[in-house]
Image 1 (cartoon, one colour):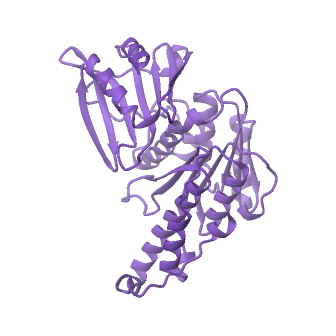
Image 2 (image 1 turned 90 degrees about the vertical axis):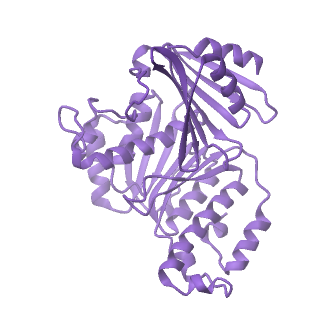
Image 3 (image 1 turned 180 degrees about the vertical axis):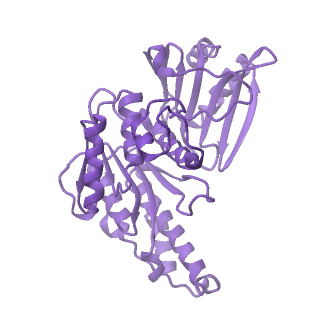
Length: 378
C-alpha cells in the first residue's frame, strides 16, 4: 500500500474529479465509497460519501487524512476508479492484497465539469443541457435539453440504472467489442440509455441486442435505432427460454422479465459465462404457489403477506444460486419504493470463486417446500 499512498497523494488535489471504491469484500459493510474534492471556507478538503445499506455517511478530510482513509477502505474493496482532469486510473486489489494501478490519459471532454461546492446538487451521468435524442423522443427532455418537470422521476430512474452499470465497467473489456443482451427490453428507454452511455460517453465498442415478445415494440425500437445512427443496436422478437443465437455474451440485462422468464435469462447468462448480470425481477409468482410451512402459517395464511414473502425468497435464492456458480452477487435498491414496488436489482459480477452454499440452499428450499426454476435450470 506504500506505493499506492504515494500515487494517491499525487492525485488527491484540486485536479481530482472523483474516486469511487466498489466491489466490496463484505456486502454487510459499506458497498460503495465516493471521494471528491470540496472547497470549504476556501480550504481544499476531500469529502467521503460512504454507502452502507440504504444510508449515506459523509466526512471531510485533509489530503493526508484522505490518503490514509482511502488506503484503509481499500482493504475492504477490490477496486477503485479514479478520474482526474487528465487521466483515468483503475486500482485493483487482489485476494492476497496485491495492488495494481492501471492509468490512462484522457481528454478534458471525457471527464465533464468539476463542482467543488460543499452542498452540491446530485450530479447525474446524463445531465440537463446534453443533446440526448431518445430522451427528447421520450418526452423527458425538451428540444433545448431541459428536463421536463413531470418526467423528472423517469430521468432519475435512468440515471440510477446507469450508475449501476458505471460501477461494473472495470469488469468489462475495453480492448475489443463487448456483447450485451437485453432480455425483455420492453419500453426502449433504458436500452437506449445503456447504449448511449457505453458507446457515446464511455467510448466502448458495443454490440447490443434487445429481445422482447412484442413485435410492435421491437419494430418501433429498430426504427429509432436507425434514426439515431446506433448501428450496433438491434432488437429482435423472441422468447428468452428459446433464444440460442449467441454462444458468448459479456453482459446480460433483464428488466422486469415476468416470473420465471427472469430465471431463464439468469441461466442463459451463466451458461454464456457473462462477466456481468443485471436483473430487475418482476411478478415472482412461482414460489407463491409452492410455499408451505406450518411454523410460518401466521404469515403464509394471508395472501398479501405470502405474495411478498414469496417474491423475497425467490430473489434471495436466485442470488445464492448465482454465488454458487461463481458470481459476486448483490441485491440492491433500484429506485425508491414510493415510485414502484418492483425496486430490487440483482447485480452479479463473475469472479470464478464458487460459493459452497448448496447445503444452505437445500435447507431453505426444504423448509419452505419450494423448488425454484433457477435451481432446475442450473
